[in-house]
Length: 194
Image (cartoon, rainbow, N blue to C red; front, top):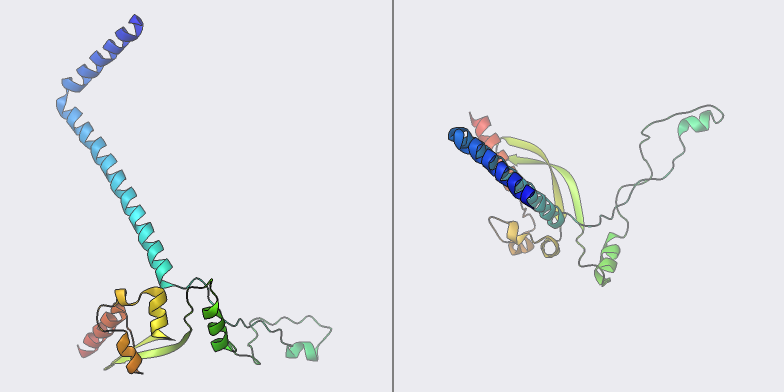
């Protein structure tokens, strides 16, 4: 036991000599370690917060399941008809006999809404569009939805900065536009005016 105490006293004496013989160097070393650990804790906190935020946005902004018509019909190609015994390779054959529309979509949505395991179903139709604001014209995509069902699933009211969802029920040509698109259209208009 005495050996341990004497070695501990020796270690403490050596540490005290090194700490107090050069106080400026000791303070700088302590501040460096404190800053490093503080930055590590701050970055871990930032990463955790960003992960939680991203997960929350992803989970509340997109549906769990997409139901759509995948075009997979095998079509006979003209080369196989003309040259059935030859080696014929055709890439990206354009579909001709079917469309991407989902058949009996209304019936599928009603069946999903009556299933007790499903919280809700919101049908959506999308199309490519041009956004015109005076002389500014931007490419974009527009999605048509049943707005109240969409709100029930994705809580749109909490994300809106201006207007009311109920107004869209009485006005057939209403649209919800993101603040980023609004700023971009106004920016394009200003750029064209100059």
